[in-house]
Image (tube, rainbow, N blue to C red; front, side, top):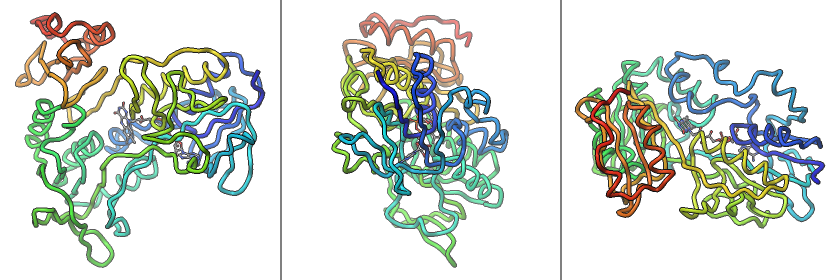
Length: 400
Ligand SMILES: Cc1cc2nc3c(=O)[nH]c(=O)nc-3n(C[C@H](O)[C@H](O)[C@H](O)COP(=O)(O)OP(=O)(O)OC[C@H]3O[C@@H](n4cnc5c(N)ncnc54)[C@H](O)[C@@H]3O)c2cc1C
């Protein structure tokens, strides 16, 4: 039986794991270590409601103080973990303190990638934390033009907020269309049209070679085709890498994240969950997901398994993104290596749903402003319906 559990990472996955441990009857010492000073908060609204100014930070706290207190945990916030000794079973903090454990949850999330240049200029932003968002929000209020490096979901969401705030927005990506790797060429093309129709200057198929500055402030972006984009605000949104640097000498297997088995276990007495975890999905193989719902679902299973259960983690993943008035929802596996077939609605009407498949079975489903269809099609993914059977239209009535 465990008597001391340490959770490293005080956000969606870390908090959920702590709550699951208590719910499952763990009564021992619980310590939660987090490098941010804030109580756990939700990240998806950062690039949406918070950035837009529609919500203030108090709206995104994950739990009220009273519920956090019910956990009866020791909170060590504002303190990064700097090392792990899995033999001596202790976490070493950046200030030198050592915290012993007999069960450990690793939930340190991901860190934004940086360009190899330009981050010393004022007006150049990354977006991962509440503090990042508040700084970018301040920037949006005084800027006239914004360049976004990277047309993934984060860049695309910020482009939408930028246009809604009246800025000139240029979004730059070396790939041919926004989010093409995640969603494939057809959906990428529709996203490109969406952004262009809202006035975004979309520069796809071209890289960034430098950020230019004047007097220490960013002035624009130099592109690999020799052109220059003027911008007094730049967001670098080129993806994130799992936050594993503190584990570098731990001996844990670190590939694309902390490598875990199908039970989310990285080593005896150690589990990982959320954006930092790469685990073996029993049906589809090794995976690491940067999805909000995955953080909750995986942390719940990881915590149960830490306490002795043996539950394989085999979710139908779920991801959503909000851009302008479009809600895009995706279940399961999507991507540019898969077939894509529209089964309901029509893109020209601004509402449709489609399936992804590997030629044999349905692997994923997406809906564009059709939440009801998203939920219906999830079952096709969960049941791995044969592709031929699934691609017949499910309904001509696109009620929502
Ligand atoms: C701006 C933004 C918008 C998003 N929008 C969506 C969306 O619309 N839909 C969707 O499905 N997903 C979205 N996501 C992804 C989703 O928020 C993440 O998948 C989720 O937050 C992952 O939770 P996590 O707890 O694993 O990691 P995180 O939320 O990253 O939390 C990890 C925590 O660990 C801390 N930490 C890191 N290293 C250390 C250390 N050494 N010591 C102590 N603490 C450490 C971090 O500072 C952080 O507080 C968005 C993410 C961002 C950043």
